[in-house]
Image 1 (cartoon, one colour):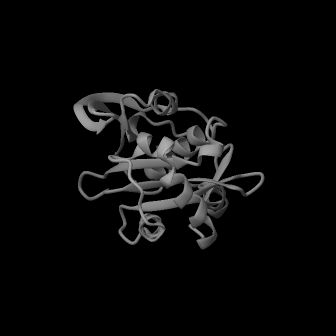
Image 2 (cartoon, one colour):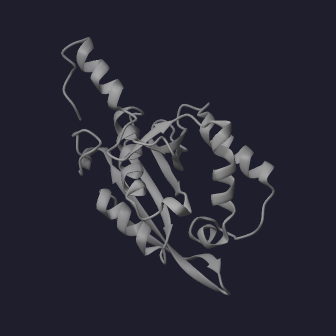
Length: 200
């Protein structure tokens, strides 16, 4: 994807920008992030876009879920809090999980807080996490599953460079009927080697 580094300066320049996008920066989960993450996860209007079933859950179980997603104890899993680069305000959370050898494929999950949606944070976070997965984790493939009715999310993934692979017909159930789920993916060979702030 990229040429060999000429020296320590090139390596440090890569490291210094690895977790920075145009609008967002990734950092480790802080305990102070958890109340907002729990609130966003529990909001039924947004849960229907991300969860298999909309139901109230205790804050403790959601807190533990985000802690587990952020531990990254297995080499094929990472999770980051997403913050605005300028204000350092928490705007969401991203995760890559399930990557194993020899396949080197992971699944991407992203959650942007309800009050931060529509400002480009999701697009930048997906681009930055995909770039991280290919450049730092050595992944070959990253996929995401999205409800077919979530047209905004599908547009974000397509804009960043994900391609529709197929449809899982009637894979989810909401409002008394079944809905399709779209599988989208990006491959390392198709991903731009430009810095993460540029569109592939």
